Length: 126
Image (cartoon, rainbow, N blue to C red):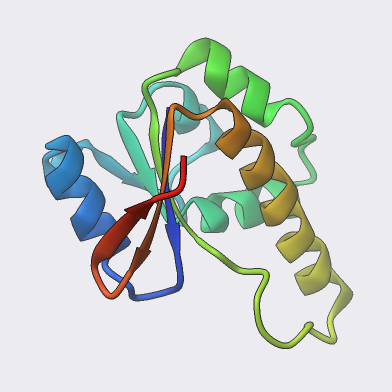
């Protein structure tokens, strides 16, 4: 598994597309796809949006990192870092940010490569 992380609008998807040679049709948008796509897609961007959708559906997310590793170990995930900045007033927003952080931490530990992208420039951190 590979992870590309960074702030919003920093060129993460373009970076990942060029680095890994994935054509646009092979990407799934996490804000539009389903949880099942995690286990079959070549690449998912807006992964943080998929986490929100899964939380809103009430599904259990505890096993997602292990299921991805077992069923789709070549997956490329592109996600925003959502934990910086002002802490949201709404409880659901705080819970979502925490879930993103916890899930991405576990996925990063299982990943072969983690790259942070800022201004379109990737910096390998693992």
